[in-house]
Length: 336
Image (cartoon, rainbow, N blue to C red):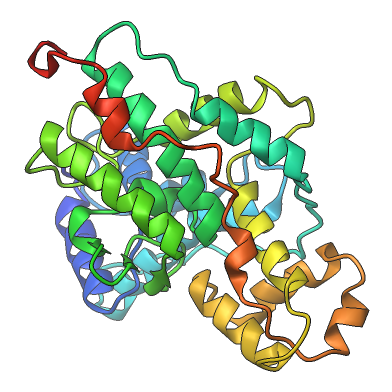
């Protein structure tokens, strides 16, 4: 993002550095503080001091924020910013009130095996023409990107913002730095997913030897959230009719794991803790949300657990062409 433009720029930069140093900074905070900075520039040109009007105007609930949690997420960083300034005697205004966090009533789509197989079939059937680099990138990126969401429970933003330096393909571990909240965490890739990631990385190194982001766009930047939304929608509705969004692959990951906790092995709450940490939840309460989404959970809770998560990776038998094959069949690569 560009530098801050308002008179608050030095204070925002100091605040952001402080939060980063304490491990309490993320892309959502950065986006919202930039938007607040823009709000000050547009609505208070020439201002030299932070006022209550500036803060209250930005933090007022909008008509489009039907859920209090959306409102809460947008203003939380401003609440922390104002308190940061107050503790250093840089302002005397009041921090905004934080809305009470409401229980989630949202029920994600329950994917069927047929829907998922159809979706990944669409991912693997992207056209090779016209012969342009962006077309090639889409063709080799989408099958891997969405399988990573499916097989790891990773958030869409976490996948988009993965840097090459955060992906260890020797041991199959992802270092998730850009996450929701302040929770840096690690994800271990399923063996099958690791193979796909390695093939994708090899192909991308031929195209962009010095790329910064693991899933790099043709411009060398990370993909936007709109890229995820548009591509998922196009490919999902190629064969399916039920409403679904890409983020629901994360919900599916949690539910499928809980459904597998039958048989011998770790106790239920050990499994739950591991799942919670892998998904980057700050506490177990967030993971417990999935209890109500798992059929016959009362029966699962009464048993010991232990079934590993082999079944959470999609059946890739029909994905015979490697990314190398996709890349090499284009021919005359210098012309792409």
